[in-house]
Image (cartoon, rainbow, N blue to C red):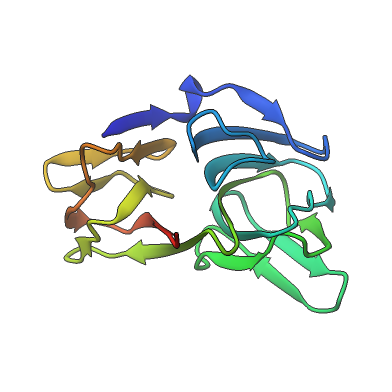
Length: 183
């Protein structure tokens, strides 16, 4: 397992240049946007504007901190996310515009290449087991205890090929990322 703190990561510009992202993990290792099969990152949404388009990618967005983010879809409809709403999934090629409720938002983003991988981002409460196929765990507001391990806000645990993240959530909630390869 690898413990990653946001302060250890290097900020990179968004694909469309409209903000900053911190790549946590990608597969295969070192993959960029064009050749990744899956990617986990955090992003700061500090201004209103359009989201980058990722054709053939499925995305799930979870607000970690901030007062709220309104996503307006060009095809109609909108959704409001805050640091209490469940993870929200949408196609990466969807044209959408983000509006902020009041101030910047830090979000957690999971992307998988459609037809090659699938993913789930689930909230686990105290007493629930972490699935043995989870590839990452992250918390929103307060420290979380999983087995004997304590995970603090702005920390992410990522599994490697020799370990899994399974265990019992002692205090929660914790966000678990599950990625499955289809081929």
